[in-house]
Length: 140
Image (cartoon, rainbow, N blue to C red; front, top):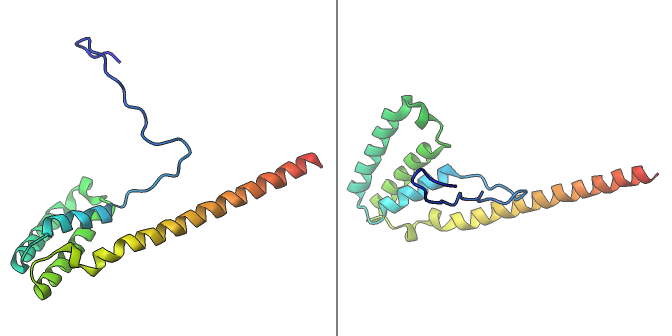
């Protein structure tokens, strides 16, 4: 592709492969991990202030149509801030490494992926069986 100043620019190809399973974006997970990054090392008072600010932004954004369909990210962020305030109040400055919920998330994600993999394999097996049955009907 040529630009207006005569330079050639490559047009990026599609990132995904055709036929490859699409992994949906988990906006709630993105929100939780964003909050955890910001909260690392926060004291209970700092975490409380951050929770109040997040609640204020959620309140102010409630009428914004663009923010209304955030895939559950806002609710997940608020819930995570509440969780962090509770942990920081009990155990001092927040560190995700000490948070049991954070440590269990990768195992839960693996379990969900295994279930999804089994579902895809079962669907593929059923399609193959249907193709075999259709082919057998053609031959008879």
